[in-house]
Amino acid sequence: MIDLYTAETPNGWKASIALEETGLEYKVNALALSKGEQKEEWYLKINPNGRIPAIVDRDNDDFAVFESGAILIYLAEKSGKLMPADIKGRSRVIQWLMFQMGGIGPMMGQANVFFRYAPEKIPFAIDRYQRETRRLFEVLERQLTDHEYLAGDYSIADIANWSWVHSYAWSGVTIEGLPNLERWINAIGARPAVIRGRAIPAPVDLGAQDEKTLEGGRKILV
Image (tube, rainbow, N blue to C red):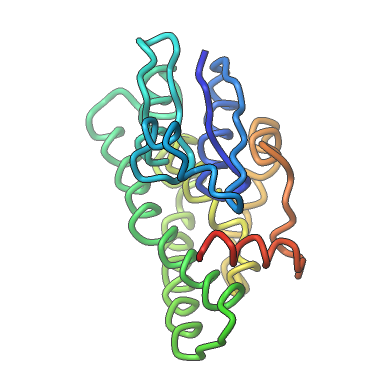
């Protein structure tokens, strides 16, 4: 049994989607980020960084794993799914996983902050992060031109990138003119395990201008 500590965010969806795809047994522990539950002392013993997601593998001496990319690798290796066993195939998957961790996630995250949550609109910051996000989308588009998935077969690289990229509208970025990226977004979004994982712990419509969502995001950023 794996304990999953999560919330309805792109990084949280990575873990829940991977758990659904691998079929590993798990229990959901939803944290209220706006209440600061991720900063409580008991949780910091699991994740010293005070973020979500985190997992605790009860079948492996209560082994805790934090950082979403590390969780994806752990779940893939534990289950023997979503990552090739050969060194080249494994490296390709990890390269595209790192592309998300170092590029897509941080750039879309900052686009979200300045485009959606910041009380003061700073055009330079909004433009800078939206342009870089679009550039990264174009990198994905080129890769997907001749590949059904990012790194060979469907893998944790696709899960990691999709969990962020499918919410492009929330970042104020368009995918117009990127047909391969759009095809990939739709194909992965239709997978039953992805649909289930995306709904954990609760569905959120990131395409809506919902004041409750905005206010919750602002509280987390304080």
